[in-house]
Length: 129
Length: 142
Image (tube, rainbow over all chains, first blue to last red; front, side, top):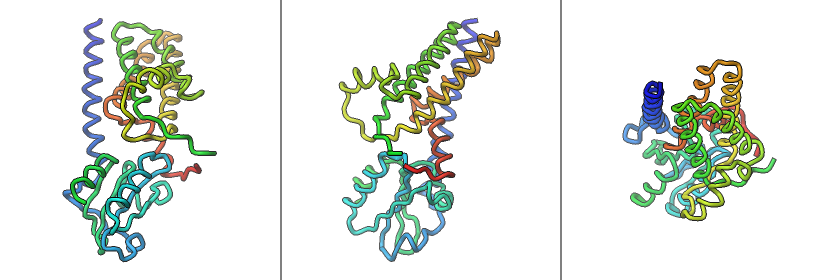
């Protein structure tokens, strides 16, 4: 009986590992090395050469610091905050699964980078700006 | 309603680790009292706040002072909702044991154990995601 229950526990842990992997792929949404995003609406760009679009939710405690970090690190760029709960059409269009998710767009609205999570933003800012 | 102050996300993760280990251990050795016991543990944290959850309080008072500050904070509402879902599952599991359906009872407890293990090891909190998905469809006043 103990052996059978041990097998069940192992199967469960294996399933947890599998789900973890699948979820991470889903959470990342569109991969940054395959940027098949739609163009960013011109209303968000407002003519800027570079625009950071920070997707947030009212529950995201790390979104505010991420926004501040981007403003401080890239003062020449425009930084726009989009609340995914209030703009669900935009969140759906860009496959936003979690907050913060940050897009970097050029003046034409082409998405140059997609960063999911505060750590990804930190690491991108450190290496690229 | 005012937005609650953000919390150290490692607190709920510690709580989920203890929950997963306890439920899996309880299942392994067929120790059924672990299910109602942890239903009460989750209920205390979900209904009364983190100060009243025994393992959340243990983390806050004993473990957190020994760690470096968290790199990021999180809103307490999604994990609290997730705990409430856990209470429902473990409560239903307890009723199943009382009714003599131990297979159903352990099945419900193992669902909670799997989700707690997932959250504790990866930060993927399914209950929180449900809360956030619902919030995305229904703007929430803060």
